[in-house]
Image (cartoon, rainbow, N blue to C red; front, side, top):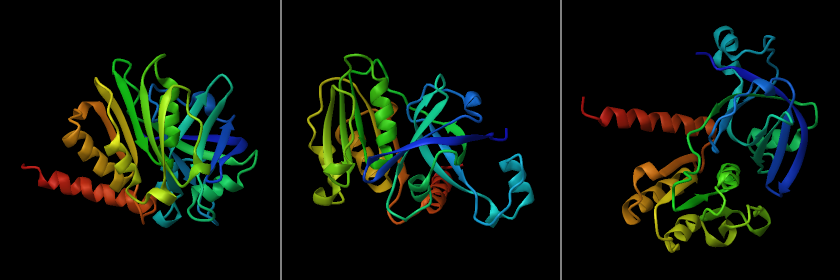
Length: 268
């Protein structure tokens, strides 16, 4: 089934930290955007190529059928931080590294009335209310999904969050009651997140874990939780959101190649 493109307009922006900008968009098609039970709900943001004229109404299937591939819009994956149908608003948080990248500079320059197009949503995770406690681990790219998950926790639930950011100024507020361990990349080094999770004293009972962020760190944490901590696979939500040295197009190509290699290794 063709994926529908949702068209919204920017209503306001907010600088959450020096390196993260919140964009709130609404109007347009938001009434038809489906709600889901997932807290890692993600969308594909659609960024038109400069100088290319696209058919109206905007439709990705038509664009892919009629235009050469190098004129297709670029796509970037982002988590929906919040969706408020009553207010007619969707919130998305963007990590910004100055002028680098595509989506971050767009968010930094966004003004009310700017068009935001997206496809989705996807997602697969929400905190299990039957778990004895919850573990959240990730970097800035995972903070929107972790924040949304923390807000969805049942009253009185125990949760531990290990969060890697560039430095103290990049820390964000999480709901009261969440045990927080902030890892500062500027002092802890490249393995700080993994080492911080390894050093944790796990509470007693069944954990439901959400571990997302840079692919290398996520892979190391997955092995640690499965092999060293004995967490069942069914109680893990683990995924690499990005990889050092690769933009999203390159990272998606890497993942596709890895999946193909895994399939080829399975006996026929």
